[in-house]
Length: 167
Ligand code: OFO
Image 1 (spheres, rainbow, N blue to C red):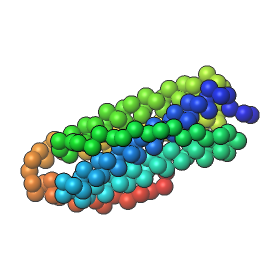
Image 2 (cartoon, rainbow, N blue to C red):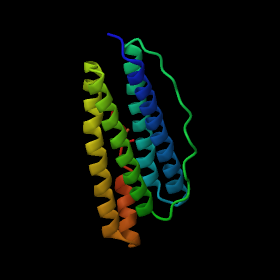
Image 3 (cartoon, protein in one colour):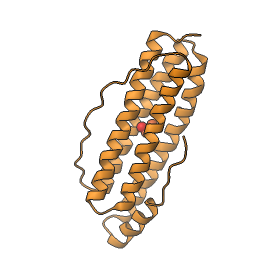
Image 4 (tube, rainbow, N blue to C red):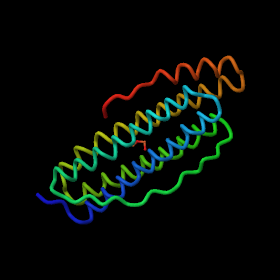
């Protein structure tokens, strides 16, 4: 069954949002590299790749449904941050917006009675719960270490151990 134009356009908007997330995280990776925190930079690069996978999951879904993909423009991210905590506070804000847009897309798939979309979007709903929880955990730990150099050094090493797992 073909998807409605309204639903396809809503998927296009979400694809744009996922690529926008990737671009924001790439700018954060650059900031960490420039501020001598290579482990946090690695973590952010993995996040950039993960967001690209999210976008491609939606692209593949539209293609599998026989629908065309439109790639909308993504904006230049803000590249000035004041501290690692500031970066992750912004990640949290950003992910809260992404959660809201995934939830709105799911609502649209319910209105349009498109069952396959609902199933693929349930994966994204779960993923957002995990992403928000991970970011809150990092924020709490950054608050705990404060400006203690040795603790930041150890945290950075731990963050650098992250590797990409297939979405
Ligand atoms: Fe794609 O989950 Fe973050 O944005």
